[in-house]
Image 1: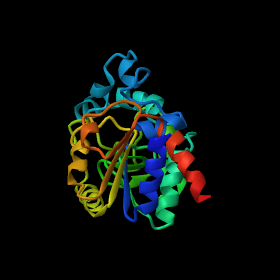
Image 2: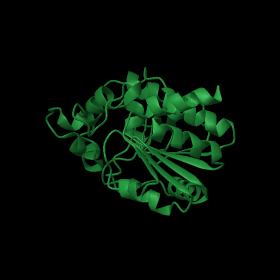
Image 3: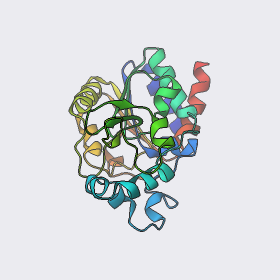
Image 4: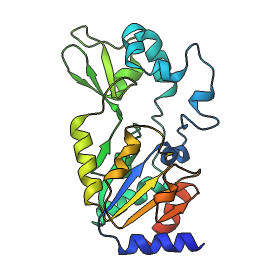
Amino acid sequence: MEKLEQLKQIIQESERIVFFTGAGVSTESGIPDFRSVDGLYNQKYDYPPETILSHTFFVRFPSEFFRFYRDKMIYEDAKPNAAHLFMAKMEEMGKSLGVVTQNIDGLHQAAGSKRVYELHGSIHRNYCTKCRKSYGLKTIEESEDIPRCDCGGIIKPDVVLYEESLNERTIIGAINAIEEADTLIVCGTSLSVYPASGFIRYFQGKHLILLNLSETPYDGMADLVIHAKVGEVLGEIAKDYE
């Protein structure tokens, strides 16, 4: 495959790679993509997922929010796949500045990545909305109905809900990394969600690579576009670094 060889060459020559990842990186670990044919948006609930996963809904109907959240947002048994492992390997070798991700599953860290900018937060961090005490994922999983802190406050997952702003420190870190990159590899995202999709506009480096199953609005801007599964492509390239 000519494009695969081209990608291998670019990675070989790059010194400051940044990976920008979306749901398509985690689907190969068994975590559904919200917007895929079989994703959450196409399943039937009392309310559409985008309504349930909004700040307003969390405040007004916390019991219903957590019933959905436990059922559809937590995949604790999911394991990193070849894509996650390759990205961690590139960082370990000093070829990558890190990962900017829209995912909240923590699989990049589980694979060994140290510099991960989680634009939409993480299911593994939770905090009391009243006293700000921190809690792990187990607290959410094992609590009945609405998880509550010792102080009585509701424990909220540290994920960015609809109507909420992205974390400013995370934004700054992500933009800085992208601006410093000589190669930006966008993996498993349709680049349709704003503001995350706008981050690639900060890239000023040499090679913009888009690796995604379907077309994106940015395909025309890229130096190389590969429509394939991320784990399969990066897993193949990883063989050169074993």
